[in-house]
Length: 211
Length: 366
Image (tube, rainbow over all chains, first blue to last red; front, side):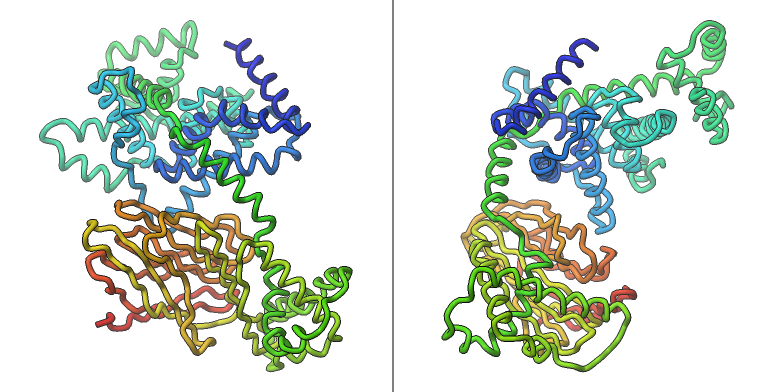
């Protein structure tokens, strides 16, 4: 696994170097390789497919323009995720200020159709579960969301999370622990609310998420 | 050492388990993560054996984690993200420079100049190429104006004569600079500027209308009244709740007439462009989708100051006005059923240092 990661990191550096030498195909490789990760990160933070799509493009536009200034001192992926997290957090905080409450996208047929190798039922169940996770995430503070997304959507270690968030490892660890606790509490509360006969509880939970 | 710091932090927060049995929640989490060894691990296990609520807590962590992990694993980006990105990249490269503050200010200044001297300038031969460098001359008075503005001075000296007192070749160069900027920005139109006072920055409007979007930008540099005069949605009756077109006009106390804010003609497709990275002040943008309900919020980012108007969530449209700190100030809601059901609102945009808002509701448009 670690060996794998090292290879991938080297790949990134080589691709960045090729892009800076004028090879635009190298940028495309970076894009293809990282687009899902970036999308996952921003979607987890903002909770809207459309916004995540928009933000993902903006992240890569920024990367495209800023790559000449990229320093090899840090890993490309770390740098990329930092941009993604910042964009996502900005958007999430901005929309909060604008009183646009997180609205979850309706289950889209296109998304489901995009997974043809799976049984419709299981796709639907997975989608439901994913929506539920996203709902819970949206009840968590933004600072918690970014830690959770990096940990679970991108499988980063605490050390890597600290690097992306630009904080100490201890701070990242504390933040992640708190985030997990808050997520778990919200998750359990929502889960309990969805059992038959407990719909009211669900609504009151929604009004007062655990913070 | 980190570990002890972390433990201390957790102790400070109390971090009790949700169970209320007083057991340290962070230890439970550490146990869950298999970070404990030896005696610590055995202690937790011993506690778990007798504490049902901590067992439930642990099970909760298990479920929450596996849900998070599987959610992360199943999420993929939309299929057309890549092609969309390259289209956007190409668009951004085709447009060499956003009409930004540095361009818009001289542009606005010379728009006024052109109004006064346009006839003469048009009859004169073009300025030498080197003259473009003089465009910076257009920035200088503008910047001093801004500084004076921050000091809160109010001098009633018309700005046009100040600019006009500069030698005419320089003015000509500025005029060419603006023309070049307007030309480069794919049919961008820079207009306006009615600065009446020195020490107060002139108002100006920059309208950018490339093929795919309509964005109007406007910087407000003085206490003023902005009234949303009219919002018009052209509903399509045959095709459901879709919106074919929308126009919005605003009225300010300084410009006596109504100014056009944005327009979207019928049948022109999707308009959904956000203006995030503007450095030239507030932007007003409009977004809607033809024929399909869609949540769409357009907001202003990085706006140094001023007012922003956002028309969002069409076909159910909300028109928002915010102040420079992006705090919510007022909104107008429009239903899709009627073609015109906008409330009128008056929003007071205070001086740069004072963002207090006052909202006056006027009777709805009959």
